[in-house]
Length: 155
Image 1 (cartoon, helix red, strand yellow):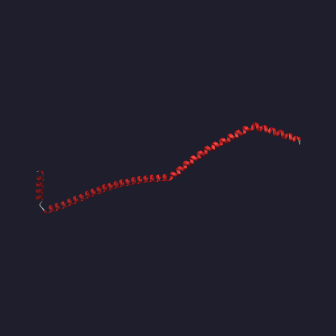
Image 2 (spheres, helix red, strand yellow):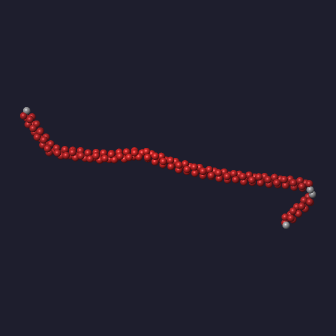
Image 3 (cartoon, one colour):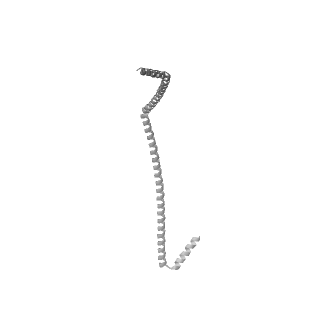
């Protein structure tokens, strides 16, 4: 038993010496780490509080922001509506102009056809009358009438 006590006493003295020599450095380093962690945590808490305040501010402004976005959307919708309405009117005017030009072209073509038909019928009637007149009359009288007409045309 005395050796055990002596062994324990040596161990206790060595442990005490190690605590006195190494303990303050260990505990000071550990204290510095804890202080640094506290400072970091405080900084993170301040940053989190700032972010929370910003988010809270944005949440408080959310109804106003929603109304602003709605108003902006209404303005954009009105612009698009006006643009589409204007483009539709322009297209309608182009279609009307195109139809008017087409109608005028068909009308002109119709007038030309009527004139051509009228001229053909007039020539047909004139030919018929000349044929009837030539068949009924004296060719010499007709030659005399023709010469007279040519003479009048020169004067």
